[in-house]
Length: 377
Image (cartoon, rainbow, N blue to C red; front, top):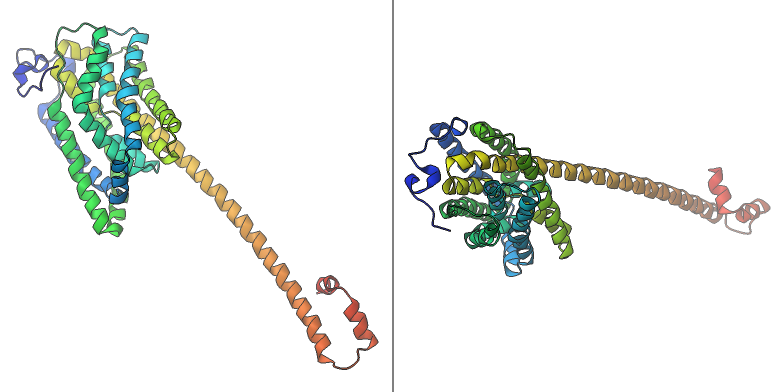
């Protein structure tokens, strides 16, 4: 591993002597505008999501980091191992296998925070896991790549994008910190901000997905193997993360959170690392995988949210029918008991109006059962 390249001439992938092929040409100004706008929008989104974080719950996760530990085990244990198994099973070329491995070693992305909010997950745990995995990536990414990349011989060293990791941390922690402060001081206003941010987040995801595909349309190729891996990889991450959380006796809310955090990776960090480490000839074969992975993880996330919201709506309707049935039964019982009570009181009043010895009609009426009198009414 080597340090991050600050100048474009220091990295083979960014060398000025090599011209980008036609398939990888992207308008520089348009890409810059897209990057700046998406960064600002993501910062505002993380600020709105931070309004759902409570200091007390966040401190409880930090003081007893069992959920965070399970999430880090999924992020830097299961995902790199799964990437290695997929590369071996599909007999990928060394360059393609490294692209899959780098994706598996990347930390969790902020997209998982949005999906966690929509499935009523633990937002405190989700933001804590995203932050901790990004910090841990400073050391865990080089370690995981070193452990698994020995199977393929590489002619160049891989460059860890430390600068990109630092920018991600800043864009994540500062807006969330402001959101936590707003939630602490103005809880009513924070709920409004949170609802607006959830809607803006959905629109932002669609815009980023479409714009990313359009800007890098030339990097798509027809390799069906990489497309297949990019489709099943996030699904495996979601399933294994959920099962590991369930095996460690986490709550259902935490299981959903850890599942989404495991399958959602930081796509931008993977693309940056590939651009810093490989030549343009190799990038033509590699860039299609992170782009396809990002697209499929968006589709998987929306499907998970749709399935959860459908289940939640059916469960709510079921409970609503049960509650309405119980209300009708209780109302009928009250009416019946009130009728019986009124009938009993009327009988007692009739007996109390005529003092003295009872006549034959009074004795006959007194011997009649109460149910008969109630039914006559």
